[in-house]
Every structure is written in structure tokens, then in C-alpha cells.
Amino acid sequence: MLALHPRLFVLAFGGAAVFGLATVASSFGIEWMIDNVIVDRFENDQLDWAAFLTGSAIIVGIGFIRAVGVVFRRAAASAGMWRVAQTYTNQVANRLIRQPLVWHRRRPDGDLIARGGVDTETAVSVIAPMPFASSTVLMVIVATIWLFIIDVPLGIVATVLFPMIIAMNVVYERSVSHHFTSAQHALGRFSAAVHESFEGVQLVKSYGAEGRETTRLAAVADEVRGHRVRALTLRTWFESAQETLPALANIGMVVLGATRVDSGDVTIGEFSSVIFLFGLIALPLRLIGYALSELPRSMAAWLRIQEVTEEPIEHDPNDDVVEAADGVGLGFDDVTFSYVGAPEPTLHDLAMRVPVGTITAVVGPTASGKTTLAQLAMGLSGPDDGTVSVAPGERAIVFQEAFLLGGTIRDNVAFGRRVTDERVWESLGVAAADFVRELPNGIDTVVGERGISLSGGERQRVALARAVLDRPELLVLDDTTSALDPATEAIVLERLRAELASTTVLLIASRPSTIALADDIAYLEAGRVVAHGSHEHLMETAPGYRALVEAFEADRSAA
Image (cartoon, rainbow, N blue to C red; front, side):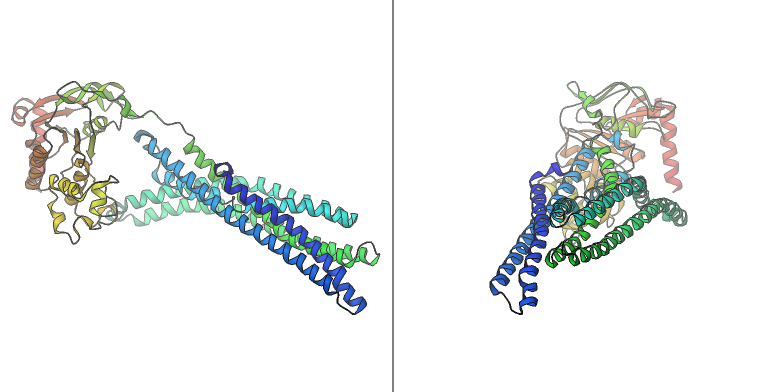
């Protein structure tokens, strides 16, 4: 992690080193002041002003150096920590963007979001205390040498105490790492479950399943809590030991130091500097424990990030789409496609041609492969066998469930592209989204999360405007006009025909009014195109098509 932004961490560790050395040096200033000023004042009943000013200058100077070290350590460490967090977040986001749709289908969205958010913050949490912990290690080494110089028995106590604290940290880290790893994975599963629940909130409320959903989420939350409680229980015992051991050692140092002063082996100033130094080091020693206690949790989160960022980019089915022959907007040549685990292929040896600039409706019963065909046309899925060919140029798709961002109409149409207001209005006009002119702020009207302030038909037309903004060569409409009334639907298709004359439109349709507006109709049955032609022709020659259309009509008449 530190290698991602080395300059900041060089400053942080450099500042920490300066702080550590200055901290040890401050004990020398205390010793000098006591032996040369305070003791002399008590013994001779007079103040040596020169010695006092010299000692004060030493203490203030060392304090200033410590302050400079603290500023560099904290500022650089904090900046470095958030830079690393930004880098990891970008790495996760970039990897998620580069992975094809087939990769995303196998993974819960909530868990992926957790890896780019919660896991990133957890992974970098160990960085901030690391420079301070390094300065503590430096202080321990220098302080131990200094204690040996002052008095060998005092140095021996230090050499026994400090390794004990380090050993205790190592034992703790090994004991708690499993619990933190399990807790982090459980947190990812919980995030996925919550995300799934929020996505389906309307369905949950419609079926009155709030209680069952609450029970399901509570079970996953209990798993997270169980692992966290076990980890924090160990952490509590560890931190209690971290508090107790230095305090007991400090008492021992006072008793031993008093004995050494009484025997004349050390001066009062040396004894005071030892106690002062040991008191300064006691808190940083606990910080080492804190850094080590954070390490298992950070490591677990870091490993979850690496699982995403180091996973190879899967083959993109879009790369298998070839250029169609002249005059062909979209072609399928003996295409077979199967979903993983499905007993039978969804599409079998499918063959069809869609001429450039035409509107072709794809009609078929449920599970006949209509949506799969649309995804193959867009390169979102790849065929097991056969070839998908598309005329060169941009492709766009509009799904039945239109997804809108929580921003403005302009945001949703532009979708990150730099376009003028004129182009936005033109696209809305093609999509027959004239209702936007009646909104309070026009294209600057905020539609709310997922376009909640708009009706289903309005959302579909805004999504269609987004798709036609760049005048694609291929436009796939997956039951896109299902929420529109027949009159509005006819207007939409007529405007598409007039404004995008060279665009090939593949229309997944289930309404007779939609089907009748197409230039050609392909009828799917059990994953094969069994008939194609005009509506009138298929009504006469394709019994399955005729039965399906009559069923559509009967359903609408009953409604």
C-alpha cells in the first residue's frame, strides 16, 4: 500500500523519525535542567540564570523539533492514507467497468460495492498509525541504548519489558486475524443482501414480505455481529493488557530507580529522565498494539480488494461481434446460446437478417429467447456457436425497465457526454418526450432516485432519448414502449423512422399495436426463428404467431 504514494510516506516516516529522536532527546533536556538548575537551586539556594536559560533553550528547541515532526507525520500520513484509499477505489471501479456483463451476473452487486467502499476504508485504516508506530520502534531502540548508558540495570529492565509487549502483540494478531477475516466476508454478504432488498423494495411491500425480509437480513447481520464480537472480545483483553503491563513496569522502574539514586549509581536528573522517558514511550507502545490490532481487519479487507483487482479480465463477448455485410444492419448465422446450468440451449441454430434502416419486431412466447437475442445483438452476451454480425457504428439498447439516475433530465440524457442543450432537446423530441417542456425546470428538473417522480412511460421515453442522442447505427428496444399508450407508441416509432432513417431498429414486442408498426416481424419459438414477414403474412401462415397475437388481444380486451 505504501508503495502507491511513496513521497508522502517518506515524509510521514521521516517526520515520525524526527519526532521519535526528539522525544528521546527531551529526556536529556529534563536531566540537564534538573541536575544543573533545580538540584543546584536546592543545594545552594540560588538560581544559575545562565544554566536556566540554557536548559530552557534546550527543552524549547527539542519541543519545537518534535512539533515539526508531528506536523509532517500526521499531515503526510493522513494525506497518504486517503490517496491510497482513492487509488484502491479507482482500481476496483476500473476493474468492475472493464469486466463484461457475464462476469457481473455471477456476483452480487452489493458485495462488489462493499469492496470498493467499506473494504477500501477498512484496508487503509492501518496506514495512519504506521508512521507513529515506526517512530515508537525507533524510540524503543534509542531509549534502550540510552538507558544502558545511564545505568545497566535500568537498561536490562527495558530490554526485558519491550520484547514482552511486542510478543504479546504478535500473539494477539495471530489469534484475532481469523475472526476479522470472517467478519469482513460476512459484511460483504450483508451489503449484498441489503442492496438486493432495497432494489426490490416495491416487490417486498407489494407482497407484504417486510417481516420475512427483516428476518432474513437480521440473520445475515447476526453473522457479522458474531464474528465482530469475538474479535472485539479478544481486542478488549489485549488492550487491557497493553494498559496494565506498562503501568506495572513503570512502578518497577520507580522502585529500582529510587534504589539506584540512594546508592549513588545515578543522579536525580538521570533518574527523572528515565521515568520521564518511560512515561513518554508507554503511550506509543500501546499505539503499536493498536496498529497491530487493526492489521488483521485491514488485511482481510485488502485481500477482498485484491480478489477483484487481480482477477483477470474475462473475454468480452462484444469482441466476437463481426462486421455485417453491406445492406445488413444485424445478422445471426446459426447462433446457439445456453445459460450456465440450463438444461437446454435458449437459442438453437438461430438465423436471421435485419436490413439496414428497417424496424424489425421480434415476437414470441415467454422464454422463447427474445431478450437473449437482444443481448447478443448488443454484445452483452456471446454465442456458444455461430456468428453475430452488426453494421459498423454505434449501438444502443433501451430495456423495458428504464434505469434513470437521481439527477436531472439533462444528466440522464447526456449520461456523461458533453452535449449542448439543443442536442438534448432534439433527442427528447425523437423520443416523443414532449412532457419535459411542461416540467417546472425543463431539462433541469430533478427526477429523483431511479426517476421516481416520473411515470413508467415518461421514464421509458427519457431512456430512449438517451439511446438516440448519438444517432446509433443499431437501436435495440427491449419492450421499451410497453408503458406507453398505443397512440404515443405510434408517435415514437414514426419519429424514429423519420429522424433515424439509416438506423436499424430491433424491436422486442409483445403488443399487437407495436407489432403492426414494424416493417418486418421475426417469430421465435423455442429459440428458433420459425417464421418472418409482415403481420398479415404471419397471421395467415404461422399458426403459433396467430395464436399468440390473438391471446395478446384477448388479454387486453379482458383488461
